[in-house]
Image 1 (cartoon, rainbow, N blue to C red):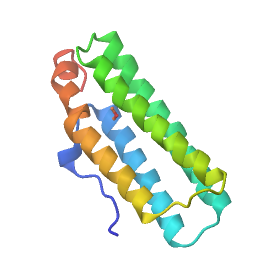
Image 2: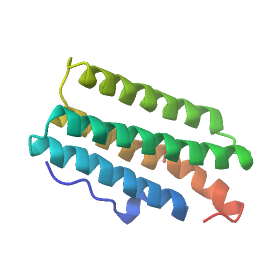
Image 3: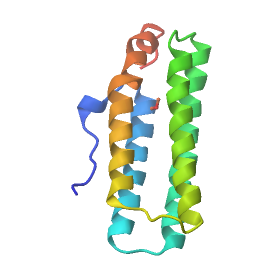
Length: 135
Ligand code: FEO
């Protein structure tokens, strides 16, 4: 599995959020590399929890800016955020309860979700924010 690398085609034209996305990518890679190295449940749990916290932080930052600037697609965007948080919480819970393992499938799911979300949902806010002077 190749490393998940940010590239300019992922840019949402808002510097702060590009930085957040890069951090999310690095956390997904961290989860992957630790999984491949066969790290224990405790280490993987900590990374998963770090990933969830940072994801929440990032989603909240986007949502606040969308609300402040009356972004017309706020509700549908927030719904997608809520769905991912729910999904990650489920993965985390099952993993902590010993019901499942972190697998390549988990990594692939997180990677595709993020790429798709950036490309098809986040990118939609670029024009709106840029028109408010936010870059
Ligand atoms: Fe960058 Fe909507 O998450």
